Length: 553
Image (tube, rainbow, N blue to C red; front, side):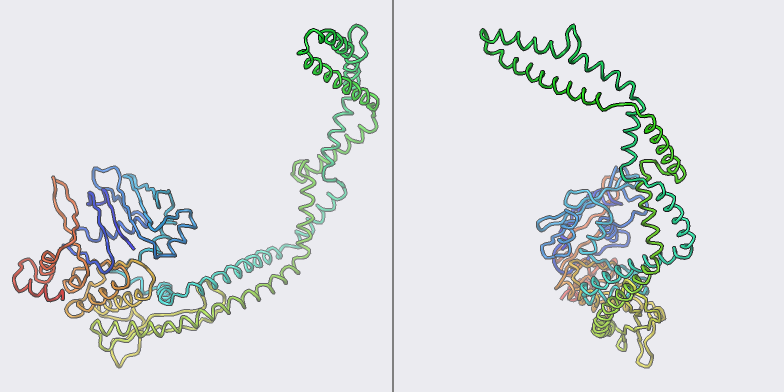
């Protein structure tokens, strides 16, 4: 439920903090006072796109904050948890817009995206506008309204999952089939590549191994001469080999130990050094014993490396990647040769997935048709309440010849109506009367809203084009709707305003040379006066006041 709106420097609103409550709250005021600005601000906070500059003149930025109580809205809680935006029972949405049209969005203080705002908004508020009828003409919107009324999210989820699985397999099949058109040429090319690479007989780590061996043989003279010199310095030098000097050092320290035991650690360190030096000399001697020049082997390595580099250059890969490239070519060749088998397997899989999809779609269709009967009667009753005594509403199914899976199922529906007893139902856009269009739209909106789990419904001047007794009925319908959910209604009709549980008056004023919008809750007497103004015009008389008071009963 929406519990508060806070707006700063938005359009002609300077600063506004407004609390909201359960039930039906009506918003009234003169044209241009800023009633619809409130709705626009709500839509922006919930991720709507910016159109033009909305920041108040001489202000740096606009800020809109919506506070919701989501204690009883599990869908919102689930969404917050999904995006790590979880809160206890409150959800605070804030959008900040600067003069350049850039904006930042936050949920519970955490920066977020407009897409997440829109997803969240879909669980919190449903806005019905005065131009809703144009939207109601769209088949996808009609199907969405039916699904919302049916409340079968589980069936839709199962269908969507079945569709996604079918679509994935179908896309893979189409891609593979497309490749088979020139697959023979590709097979010939791959066969040649695999054969040439196979003749090279390159093992996985061979290149690294022969490069290391080549490096050694190519520099064998340097390795032998420098190795012999190092060994001599360690062990064989007559005038002070490192080994002899180190042992002499050990003996010297040993003579010092009786006089200062603290030198024992130094003695051990030098002894360890002597041990390491002996090991190094041993390893170096072993190296000199096995290292030898081998021109024939060096020549073999040169030829092998040259061939590897030639093949790598020919296939436009790095020599280090040649082995992996060969494996990839073999894999692709195998897949290409077996593409017919893969296509057949995919085709069988697609048939199975399509059967699963069709089963899910049939269950959804059954529930849609069952729900349509209830909705037909509900909207028909609403039309008759709204001054169309012979009104009739019917959701009509159209056969789909192409039974290919679709994300929303295999149903093609159309909303149709009749306003005269001797006429068959017709598509909505065939209805001629503007007044009837408004009432039919309102009947559909109010009826579909009755079964929604949406915690907050906003009706923005949906009563345009009606009046008199019909307007009073609209007010009663909206009030009844407010008994089970939160309803906000912007209206110009006194009969509708009189039925609200609470009443907000929107006024445009001049304060210190600045135009501002002011919104206040009206107490009983002020509310009677406002409804009298709406009903009777500029001059308020005792008669219009009495009429206003009577309407509020």
